[in-house]
Figure 1 (cartoon, helix red, strand yellow):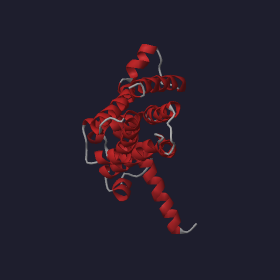
Figure 2 (cartoon, rainbow, N blue to C red; figure 1 turned 90 degrees about the vertical axis):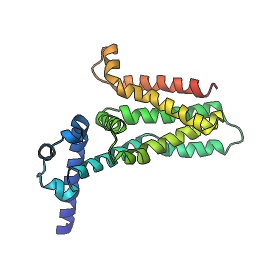
Figure 3 (cartoon, helix red, strand yellow; figure 1 turned 180 degrees about the horizontal axis):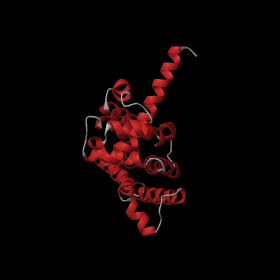
Length: 220
């Protein structure tokens, strides 16, 4: 390996460490609560690496937002949905079972993206940007929220044939069903006398939300 390649690899590893640690710290403490010295120490890098590699604390934060938006978009099943939705639209008749499976695909994809173990900090950052938007809010919207929202809206319109405003609101309401479990997760765990949201509980949650979504949209 050449010296240039070694330096590039070292730079990328440093950035990765800062981004991964940044996800946790920005979620827990917010932008103003994060100190570059603590961020660097927790990431296991020199403090000077933050301005050198990332352009400062806000550079780390922007990279964090890009990462979580990309990761969430990848987990939300939109690519699989695109293929299956095109196949459905090309058919002469539309099976209710297939339509329902597509609705479930999107709802469960969103739920897995936001509620999966290891994504707790992702959800907190998304909520922070919704409540107190920064200049990076558009990254989340354009890379994650809008692509998912537009696909769910298209499916709802395909099913109901209602006007654009109505189907956008309907899609937003369905997304809100998932977000309710993100926001009030701790209250649910207390009600169920559980310490953590494990796979079995997550499956039950997503199944119930999917049932509600199908009953609300397909039965119209």
